[in-house]
Image (cartoon, rainbow, N blue to C red):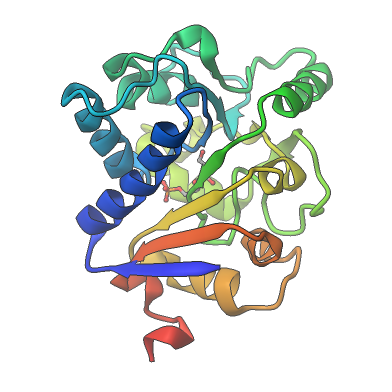
Length: 244
Ligand code: F6R
């Protein structure tokens, strides 16, 4: 895994956006695997800026998102569908018909999972953007998710519900289930970029990069992928040996 340590979030977002934009410049029909959460917001802001400056177009790009809460409709302000429109899609020239996010309606969940995995076979990510949970999750693949998993429904870990409650009025409003790409779907991406910032990610980052590859830390599976770049700030990198 290639590791790039940056001074702060601003620089992390700049480096990450250069990597993602290069994929689109190389292939205007690229498939981008996208994440929600706070880590990639700066990266998305930079992509918007490149679009506004006329140096990047998403007109022929397709996207596949990692995950969605179960039980929130796409117009709920905390749904990931809403987040993606608000943070990125509404500000660039992407065709919304080419953007894909697991549906998250509480009905026919098994069927929806199968359909999303099928879709991913046809839309293999040229690059997958990932954040990392403080417990080492990627997507909503919580600790002890099998590495060969496909799109599935998950019961969110207590720590994830707690981490994400900051975005809801109260912890009781945080959905307890989500639908997520499986680890095998993530590993199928041609290239993966992980963005991580802040001291609360330092343990997870250390385990991902230098720990044993184990299902107890889902992100550790990335050590087995041949093209992964981690871009993280100094706080998130603080526990890495390479920092010592
Ligand atoms: C988001 C996702 C999650 C987040 C992770 C980090 O689509 O799948 O794995 O990437 O929880 O979240 P932030 O960036 O908010 O710290």
